[in-house]
Length: 248
Ligand SMILES: C[S@@+](CC[C@H](N)C(=O)[O-])C[C@H]1O[C@@H](n2cnc3c(N)ncnc32)[C@H](O)[C@@H]1O
Image 1 (cartoon, rainbow, N blue to C red):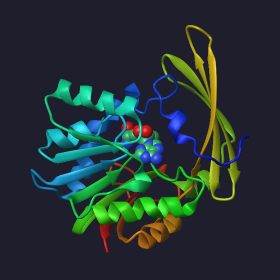
Image 2: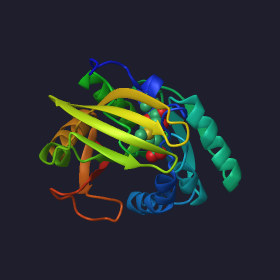
Image 3: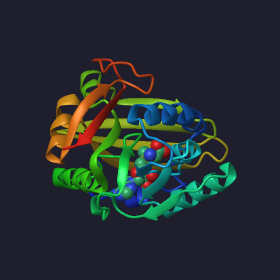
Image 4: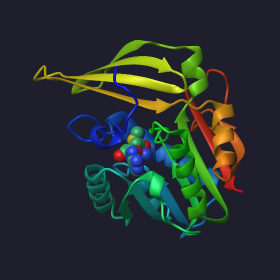
């Protein structure tokens, strides 16, 4: 497998991957409803959806009357978010940029980072830069909600490879753990054409303790950990790791 590098710019393209799969899109309204309730935001509150992708949560937040800024690196996904917003009759402010270079200052009542949109960089310091930028973007006392794959579970029940049937294509996922980085090689096999595409990427694994430490270093104080968008408490078997934090 390849060495750690900046992989995100070539990976998040419709020709290979789109986070708004039918199943993920179907889950988004309930996830956004849960997140909005947890954040306790009033109509008109300013929300940053950091790494909003194709906007599946952003439009749902906007439908709840929040003033949503969606921020992402992928121009393709941002175009899709704009189309989704137009189709739902809501407004989104969509900005393109790198999560490590957030320029906002005390602008938002809350920020979210959903569906493991974090831990993408070879340097841990870049993850901290991202968190510091998110903290700076929040008004004093503002809330931050992050949703990651639970790194503690991945380490405990390590599955080196598995297949998924994703409708139009099959996906083979192969995994390798190197220190705190989980290397994934995805082979996408098109059902109709038989065409195979392969990409290797990594993400830094965060369990509860590592996430709490990173958030604190980023200027965010963890308030609550959860194991899913159903509000379940975080346990050793939780697939997701959600943390609600407040600007310190
Ligand atoms: C797993 S997807 C999740 C997207 C969205 N939150 C969702 O749940 O559908 C991760 C997102 O992070 C974005 N991303 C990756 N690297 C980025 C970077 N350096 N700066 C900003 N966005 C980035 C990708 O373009 C992609 O939209």
